[in-house]
Amino acid sequence: MSAKIIICDDEQEILDITSMILEAEGYTVIPTINSLTVTELVASEKPDIVLLDLWMPGLSGDQVARQLRSDEAVKSIPIIVISASRDGREIAFAAGANDFLEKPYDIDALLSIVNRHLLGGEQIAS
Image: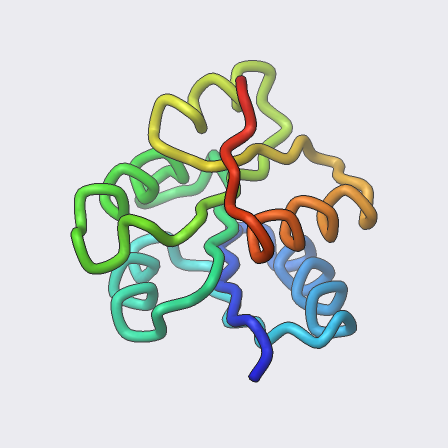
């Protein structure tokens, strides 16, 4: 059974490209453009990893991360925040993210971070 990854980004192109990259590696990807549905989706799907854009309408990635971290049933699922924001790294870690990937990201960097968390789940120092 392949690892399951939920991706939430408000830019359809990024959602599509990230999904294609991860699906080509054999992962099961559940994409959503609506940040308001992420917590329910995580609760029902129990993914192995959650990828969140930081700046989205509705709920921002850090708000979603905080919601997930406060839910006992899903709080141990690794969260990787993706953003072009200068202070995105600090915001992501303050919200409880396990890792941060800067946009525009390199495909190898994306796969490296995802694989590292699937294998070990260590947190990267900010």
